Image (cartoon, rainbow, N blue to C red; front, top):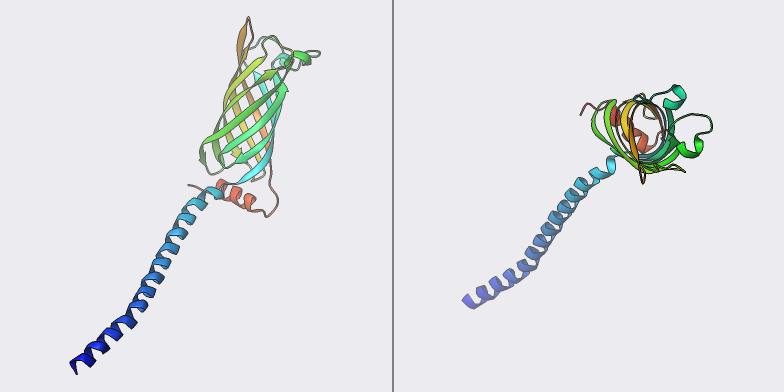
Length: 206
């Protein structure tokens, strides 16, 4: 009789062992799935920043240059792409608006910009640029500027800029300070995800 009970106990134990392994396996898979979901949720935050193309028009004027408005006025345009708080663009413009001076006043420049602070519709930006002036003796051009930006809407922004331009040549160099107003249009499609993200960013108080 004892032998029969012993055999039955062994059979019951063997039948319960696979079920225990299955339960442990299901629990492990559930835990792994939860872990993967958590990691995916954390890394997906990087994709919540709006990305879009933009066009900016700058109406700058040098403030430490002798001469009239034509010598001080330095218009430019910039086309680029925004990646959240970081912009990268190509700018082209004139160092002055004097008649006949276009051969040595026209420049092209790579200009990255980062928003160092934002609060609702306002933001403060910092830009660093590097490029060249066509046909000029002081052909190497570098720039540093900062601006206070106001987002009128998700598509339109205005900014007040101030900065410095440095021009370097083989035998001479000079620098100039400017102040100006910037108008930016963001190419955001109506009802697009990027426009919703931009709208959420400018109305947020965080």
